[in-house]
Image 1 (spheres, one colour):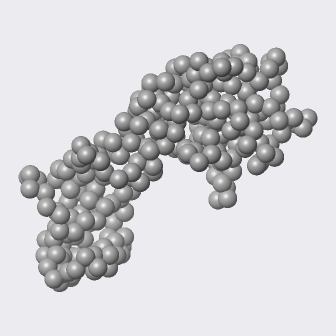
Image 2 (cartoon, one colour):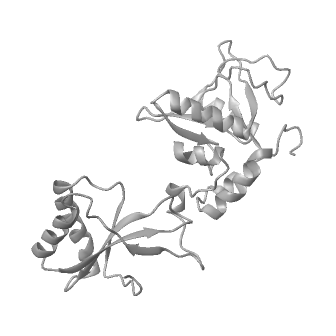
Image 3 (cartoon, one colour):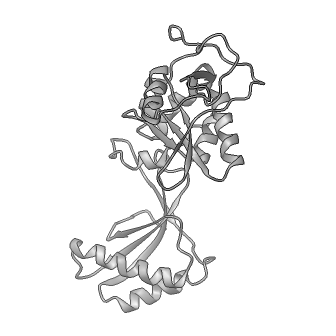
Amino acid sequence: MSQAFPFNDLTALLQQAHRGLKRDVAPLVDALPEGGFFVSLARPLDVPDEMTIPPVEAAISSHMLQHPDGAVYVALFTHPDFVRKAQQEQNWQTEDGQQLLCPLPARNALYYALKLMANNEQVMGLFINAYQDQSLMLNALEVDSLFNGVAVPFEAYAQQVPFEEGDGVMVRPADVSSVEGFNEALEDFKSQDAQVKAYEVVALFDEQRNMQPFLAINFKTEGASPEQYGEIAQRFVALLQERVDFPERLEIMFDEEFPNLI
């Protein structure tokens, strides 16, 4: 337990989790039962000092962060100094002009964040350690996984981490016949584009970087240089958007070899 903290300091583990890979998130998840977060109070609480955890029935009202696009994020911090930095930057105060903070056990803090997201459609996610170099912005699914003690990749961060020795991606054929017009769009594109001779529709999954498999199209080309791949992809996306509901995530690849694909 950190000196003067009512729980273990999660700062170092949160910095590791900033990489986003599942294996880097797992130690943070394991530490949550004995760890905690701090919030900046919008209204004072009847507690003796800022290191006293309030009773579970206490009505917490904390400051939140607003994105320029209007979205709001619950703000949690792993260290009191980080709260004070945000209070200075945002001019956060209580109604009577004080700058106060409050410690919460980690799962209590995550539950608090989830309830705010569930009850207000403007609250889009959780921002941990704002104004620090390795802050984390998480969506509701990621916060829910933390609350339930399940390590999942933080995808937005994991995608930025280069592949390391031992990393791998699972590839399997994907059936898109249930998506009306998808296969027809692929066939039409192949017939219209002289540089595309064949294609494979596959599902890709990297357990360290993905929460679930995603769709990919691997175009086999003839006479196309890598510099032209971007133009081919743009033409296909334009055609697909005219024909079908575009997938949430679609990766377009060129001339990849999947020798074990059946």
